[in-house]
Image (cartoon, rainbow, N blue to C red):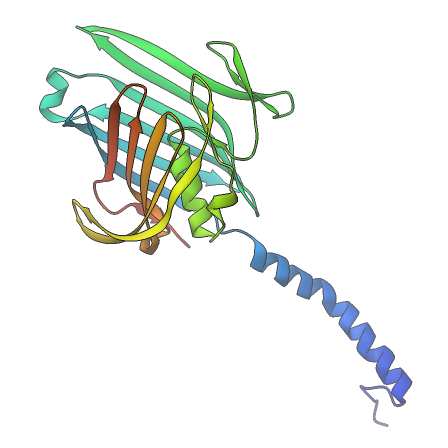
Length: 259
């Protein structure tokens, strides 16, 4: 006797189809959710050439390492070559970030800056910590506080926040980014978004997208490299208050840990 795999009557067939759809619904929802999940910035290791005060000061190495959603961005900046005779200052940063299915979030910041006067070294620490259920940013050394919101980033990590937005094709015009400094928070406004440019780097030419943003104190230009996960290729920060410009340019192609 042959067993029917399909119901005999029209009513039974209808019930059968509905049941099949209900059983497949979780799978369809999972696929839809997976397609909506943001693409994270991959782990990386990159070195930038640092230019300021009209000279090439040295290099700044940036590394990102993530465990699931929790990421640590570290930087080490120090002078190179003949500049070390006159300028020995260096700085190390450790920045906590979180990359979720829908966002990139800033979670804390530590900086150790070593400054020299003659042969005497002095270390200055800067620490931002989230408190009050992650709703307040506390500058521990100065006991200052600011409200935390999803758009807050420091001067180093804001370039990677913009990379994340570009990588996921999200609208930066509505991102409401805020630049966190030791003095205050500065809301960011964009005047140039994803302007195509050919960027000349030490190791060759790259297709790039230029962004310009800032506020009453800072004007910042950022060039992202679409062919390299929108990684920052060049960053220029002009501080109007101090009339000082610092420029970071990729020394060589970044090492990206892509699967």
